Length: 166
Image (spheres, rainbow, N blue to C red):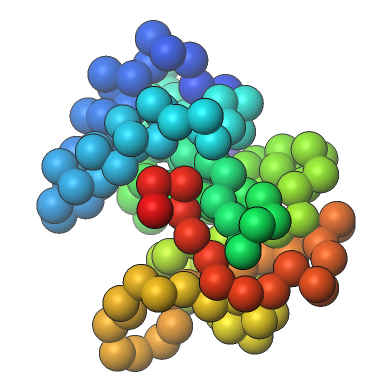
C-alpha cells in the first residue's frame, strides 16, 4: 500500500472538495452534498476519512447519521477516489477502514446508494432484504440502495430510510 488512510481534518476540506469534483461526472452536486453534511449535527467527523500519498489527498469517504424511521444508522455519502488513482484499491481501502471504525463505534449498519458490483464485494446487500426502503427514485437495473449489517445490528431496524438532509 503506497498511500495512507487517516481521519480527515477541517484543513483538508479544500483538497477533499477538489477530489470530489474530479471523481464525479456532476461533481458540483456531490460537492454541495458534502458541504451540506459538514454543516449538520448528524455529521460524523470521526468517521470522515481521507487517503493520501506524499501529502496529497487522493480519496475520501464521508459518513453521517441517517435514519430508519426514528432509529439512527450510519449513512455513507460519498466515497470517491481521484480519477488518476482509481482502480488501485484505494476506494476499497477507504471503505474497509470506514466499516471497521463504524463497527467499533457501535453503529448497527451502514446504508448507501452506490454501484452494487463494487459494494457487494464487501458484504453490502440490497437494503430492501433487511426491510429497509427508500423513497429515492432509483434507476432500473441492479438495486443501488444497499446496507451492511454490523456487529450491533438489530433486525427490528426496519422501515423507511432518510438521509440527514431529507
